[in-house]
Length: 134
Image (tube, rainbow, N blue to C red; front, side, top):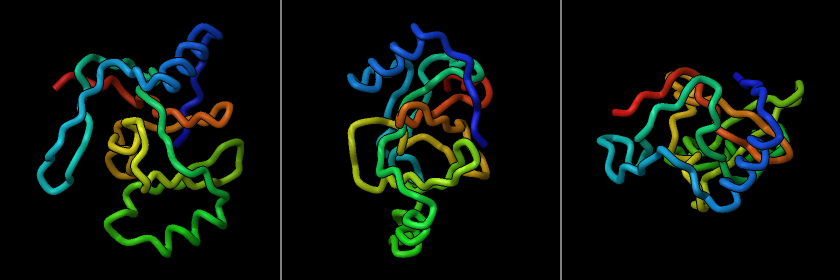
């Protein structure tokens, strides 16, 4: 599911700045989640449709993404996902560790906390519902 966000030009500039600086607010890395490894928790309330962070990885065509997914080790498959943008399917592969928290956020099809939106080749994680501080 892709969320279309109505953001002002100020917000677009702010998102681009936070992505470049990796200065996302309200997120904390948890190093040892039982059965899952690392993850992220909210340290502030995120309202619905608010940008939470960016998602960094290799942006792949649908065909190239399918091929890479099928050749990826099972333990790394959780860092790859398929999404649509303007009717075209793509894959994002965040298997390689990079700066950013997006790969640690739950974006699975089953129990996702965030959805994704692609704008100017910046893939962002958008809050689906009010993310509460735990």
